[in-house]
Length: 618
Image 1 (cartoon, one colour):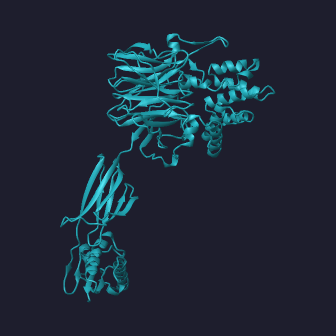
Image 2 (tube, rainbow, N blue to C red; image 1 turned 90 degrees about the horizontal axis):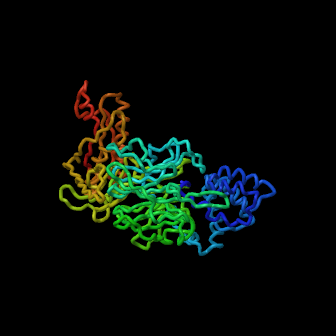
Image 3 (spheres, rainbow, N blue to C red; image 1 turned 135 degrees about the vertical axis):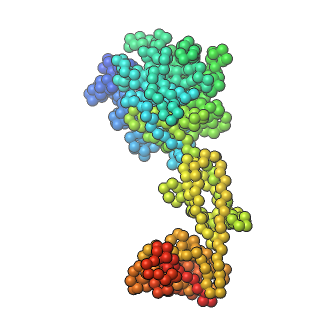
């Protein structure tokens, strides 16, 4: 990502110009050429000698900062601050401490920064920061894209099944001095029917021998805005003192003719005095959002917008204000399809790492919102974009050590409204016990419906759920909630009231079967026993005697013991449901009273002999 922020590197770096001399001339030359690794080697020799000063340690720290060597950057920022409290040094020191996992120390430096610079927008942001632990971070699912290379890949933009992004994967002999990778090019890939991307290829006619990308394309696919170097049109910033020609970031425009990009030209908003980069064009093609360090901003790189006139010319750029911009850097804007929401990266607002992705509603006065830890990490996270048609987005991040592309999917949430009623009368049933389980049978909700028989909850519509419904006097019921992408779903569940046969001598239920040689109450058995509980609740004077029987496939002694255990399990279950222990008793009879008297019994005959009976004794 750092390659696109070329203009950032000198911000705050000239405070110690009085300390430059012939000793630093060679290192300064390399620094201005963005050759930070080589520059660091020379600054390090000076820093470890008697020639060291604040300027050298600050330059050395900045070199390490730009190549993401946060351990060494921390060391040398700390050294610089021993004798100087320069504004940007304190802020960057806080950043690298946070990146190195030293959160408390980072906060201590930010508090120091806030005391010294109370009017700074970063102070205001930090003082009024949102508690990151309370951010709802469940909205997005982020996945690594298979089309990443071992080089930098970032800044994805998706339109009409085409994915455009910047990459240094092109096997060029010319290396970029910052990180010794090939120069950037604009690549594209096509989304296939199976939702995978084809092998990326160079976008025809767009790329040059300089750094090119990222790009943004209008909704009709006919106009592209992309970033490249001013060198492409032979514009340079002349540093006569160092004998250097420095390039700036420019935004270029191209139009499509059949399958070819043509009429490539730099926009009039470009100026060699500052950089303009990372364009994002609105779907109607009328407004271009971009990042720039041009005059009139708040410091560092800001986000701006400019009107695209009907004839293709541009108006005057407008800064998006301090709800978005700070004295640090805000970049990689992306405007939503409805033109209401702007996504952008910032290292000036409080977040999880260095650069975090934020969003802001441009139609309200609400402050920018961090997208949460499902998107942001302790690394650089940036270049967020989202396509409403395909319901997919893209993110760039160096969380894996190099700039990579990530697929972003929106979690599908569904408001599910459950209503429980009587299957025979249609009456609403209040205070029903509901247990809702996910696909892995984990309990998500275990609550009662309200007095109107209702319970509402939010489910992931990409996942199936199951519900267990329990209510005294009704049969227990299980049902499934299948995958359904509707935003709101009403589920009416009817449960069956318990009906039993009561004679003068007994309560007749469906058979309470037991598994072979077992005495535990099964789920099917509990549903039948609940019917007995209902009868006894409605007849509080009733007393029941439970007779438990076995089949004849074991010894008389063992069968008698097994039936005793079954009788006890049955009685214990009835008592557990609220029946007075004085109203329920039982005994096991083993195989002594078979329902079907047989010697070579069939499996069905055996199962009928393994039974319980419920005699009314009062």
